[in-house]
Length: 385
Ligand SMILES: [Zn+2]
Image 1 (cartoon, rainbow, N blue to C red):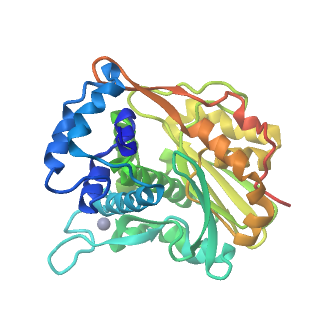
Image 2 (cartoon, rainbow, N blue to C red):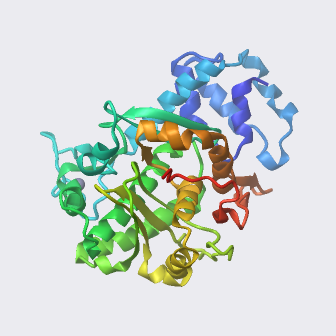
Image 3 (tube, rainbow, N blue to C red):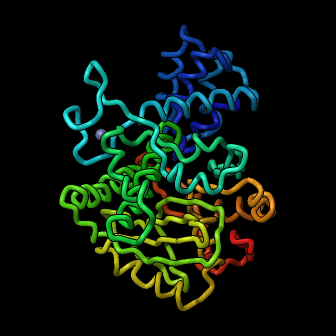
């Protein structure tokens, strides 16, 4: 069995775009002449629950060949590019061709929106035009510098509707309900949008789509009616300038005391976090829906009581947040030393174990998250001074 067929063994891997690119690039023995038959052959495989390695012998007739790591990277890059292209959309609740910015043919123009303020925040952490970022791409930790103008960009709004973020783009942060709402909303949109972008590669399960749809409904209603108080925000100040910027959203399985947080079946309750520096201090915003206060309401109180903010914020970000940016020198000085540990922490908190049952339904039911992880057992610290 050739190496790239292994992805058929993983129920969380989506392979259609991957094989399509392979075929277009004529890699691994795939080409347009046999492609339709190749895809039909995949359908002939027994369901995962009953499948054996010998079942892959039906591919022998194609004379397939392994692909190299370099080829794999080239293909995956193109797959990701197509995912981004397919997912361009304006998230605004009123988005349609009559309210969005459109081109001459009436098609909505989606712009590259910054999920972190380009001039207000990224400009404070930039160095030689670059900021440092990292990702955990389900396999490994990858830290890399990126140009400031490309950092934190996502294709999630038209220009007209992106203007709704002006109260946090151009005004100083004063903690108004509208500003807190907008920060939380942007954390939600960017995290959800990134998930949709990679859904041509990873199958997060139907529940994941429902979660996005149902959380979006709450935000949408609030935007239409200006009801910013649907979001509750705990504001924390660190008394120094830290060149770190984060905007993200995720859910927690455990609070800071290791108590499990029971989530509902119909909507995964998320928290929304934002971290940004001003001249002399840094703000950390922890937000959640008012209606989820019974789950997350004590988080803020725990954070205050523990009086261990730097460690607690570090762990929330390290374990869960994507869309994290650092000043490059700061990263080298204070963060780089933790790369191996960061990979481990992210693996524990973000990897689920999926299996297929006998009816070919995917079950994502096993998590590696230790209940006490927020106590920071590895003693990492993103706040170097
Ligand atoms: Zn729009």
